[in-house]
Image (cartoon, rainbow, N blue to C red; front, side):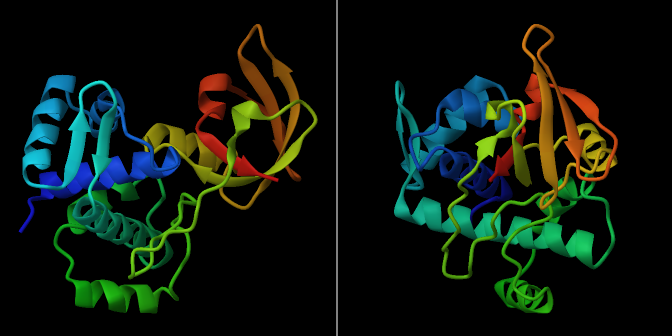
Length: 219
């Protein structure tokens, strides 16, 4: 049975690859996402390759094999369903749920997971707006663009928040930057690297370009 560390690596590699149209994932992205040193990530990836979970090319990156993708998709499904349960049923704030789901996802059985999915009404997205894989491993393609790519005067719908950091999620919630809300770009200040925004019916506010990059939107 794969360890929780193996499952975490496969889940994270899959998550990154889905955002990159299933292209190879660079080692730097893996180490950054998992909060480990590049050397630690490389050592673990080489072990995973020996076990048949992925292929690794030093200059190109990592690509999951069919078994690696299947397990990664299963863990990603567990994680996002658990996050949904923690928010919708237990009432936790969305800034608190990532670490809790990380602990629970390795222990929940397939039977309980299926009952949980049914209990929640088979949700298609988690609280952050990310698509939840089906039991069969099918996941909705996440077609969206970064708020940073939007021009002044545009109005778009918030699709998802591409960050799990607690302080950022608390900030986003306080400004009503949540999936489903409409947001208008009032102005862009290229010199200051900032944007002025307004959520329908709410006061305007400013965010930096780096924060805007983490907010994914659609028309």
